[in-house]
Each structure stands twice: as structure tokens, then as C-alpha cells.
Length: 425
Image (tube, rainbow, N blue to C red; front, side):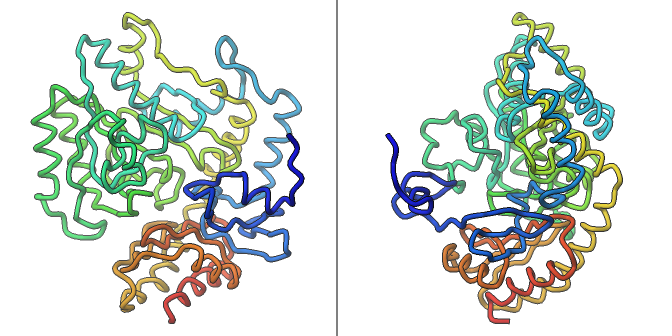
């Protein structure tokens, strides 16, 4: 059936966008093209991007090196099934990832998206224990977490406070410790680990793994916690011989000021999940990286293999642009850029705490978070900011900024000043 209708009306009437209603949808803006940190709408308006397309476009849009990698690869082969075939771009990527991460992490499973990499990590831990002859069905995590939208990932998101609480009756019941209260730069309070320690000890024979977002909890509330908490978690996991999964999908590749957020705690996980900016935000691709012990235990099990295999696993085009992204990362120019963004955020945003509309200000690397006292009218705030020439996507009580690392000083100034003007300052 062909529906004759204008493109704008068609989108509003028939297309479902993320986390919005089909009846009363949030307003969507028609994007024409993008370059650097600038998004150009079809009506001619230019917007400074404060979101990096949900953390992912760290080098901005239309990057010459990333474009070149995609164009070169697509002339060779756009896709091939990974079952029974190998190709140079996947081999290069896995080698690059092994070289970027600690020596302990040596075996790479390439997946389609961040959520799928979490599914893979959870399945790895469950199959690991099954291979050892133990049935461990529980997973320990902390409240306020977010790990993705698929069912396994949802089961380790906060069961009450997350956007997925409506599914909680359909999900397996896992174990949730109280979240850490000590903030990033606060003096460590040993009591902060008590809830986690108690639950890990109590259920140690049932727990297959622990999963956490290192240092910053993303969509679950944008909380930035003390690195000592993560270090204590790692020590407890080693004590009870529980696998530790770290979800670096949002934080990986420099967003926090370190290449990976777990570096703040000086630890190494048993399984690491990467996504989002793995391809510089160009294409969907993720990776789950694990240890020889886990890989060999699973491979020596009754099944003889790891039971997972996405259709688009190891897509050559995605792998090629990921390799180009890592080449940019390895030049380390992002370090100074992220440091500049962090310093500018601190200079301009911290004074906002005086406002009677703001509860808290949190900053780490190229992440700036304003938590308001009252819930935000998203449509109203977005319209206001678009009139200022910037793009930010608030949610609940949070206005957060994750701009591309390559954002220009003038663009960053306009972005921050536009946010400040929301509060009448």
C-alpha cells in the first residue's frame, strides 16, 4: 500500500522513534547533513551537537579518515557471513582491541550493538559456569544501572528506577546492591561497599558474574562514583572467584578522560564490553573481550563452542571504520581535547549550583551533567535550545552534555552559554 503524504507528516504518523509515543510523539527535526560538530537541518538551521549522537560520534561527523576507510572497504566487500569466513578488517580490529586492552584480555567476540555485547558477556559467564559443572543463574549488579534494551541487558538494569521497569515481571530476578554514594572526588567511605559485600558473600555460590558500568552510571541517572568502589568490587570478585563484567559501551575510547573508565581504579575485568564510539559513531558494532581461561573453559565444554552468532557479526565495513577510529585514538590527540572540555565544563557549569533550580552538577572528562530539582519538559527545552542553535537531548531531571572531542572552542562556548541561559543566568 502506497501512502501519499508529506514526508514530515508520514514520519509523525507512522514512524516510531526511541522512547516516544506514536500518538503524541516528541518533536523530530529533519536533518540534512552534518560535518564536524555542526548538524544542518533541512530548514537551513545549523545546530552545535552536544550529544555526539548518544556518546558515539567522538570525532564529529564527516571525518575524512573515517569516510575514506568506509569508501575503500565498500568497494571490496560490504558484508560476508562470519561463520566459515574470515577477512582482514576483522583480524586487524581484533588485534587492535587486544593491543588497546590489558594483556589479560585476549579473545574477542564481535557483535552488532552494545546491547548485544552485554547479552554475549552474560551468556559467556553463564556458559562458563555450566562448563565447570555448576548451575549459576544469578547476576549481581548495583541499582541505578543501565546496560541496554534487549531482555538479558534489561534484566541487569535497575528493576524499579530504570526505563525498563514495566518489563520486570517478565525478566529473571537478579541481585541488586545499593549503589555507591561516594562521589568521584570525595573521601572514600568504607561503608559504601557494605551492601555489595554482603550480597556477594550471601549468594556467592549462585552468582555467575558481576556487571557494572565503571565510574559513571549512564542512562540510569548519570551518577559518577568513587573509583575505590570499583577497586573494592574487583577485589571481592577475586576473593569469591566471581567473574567481573565491565560495560564500557558509553565510557570507552576516552569519554571520561581515560581511554577506558576502569583505568581510574587500576583494575582489569574478566569480560569487557565495548560499542558506541568503537566505530567513531559511524556504524553499529560492538565487541566483547575476555580471558583465555573463560574462552578455553567454554570451548572445552560439552557444547564445544560459544553459543551465539549474530548475522552481521564482524561486518567488514564496520570493522574497517573501527580500525580507522582506533588509528585516530592511538595518535592520542583526544587527550588534550577531552581535558580542555572538562576544564571548560568545570569553569562554566559548577557556578550553576547556586541556582535554586539545580540539585547537582557532575563533570568527568567530556561529560557534563546538570541534575535539576524538577522534571524537565523535553519538548520545551529542546525548542528553546534549537532557537539558540544547539542540540541537546535531556531526560527526566537531567541535562547532560557529551560533545564530540573535536568541538571548536567557539562552538563549546555557545553550547555551554545556551545551557546556562535555561536557568536565567
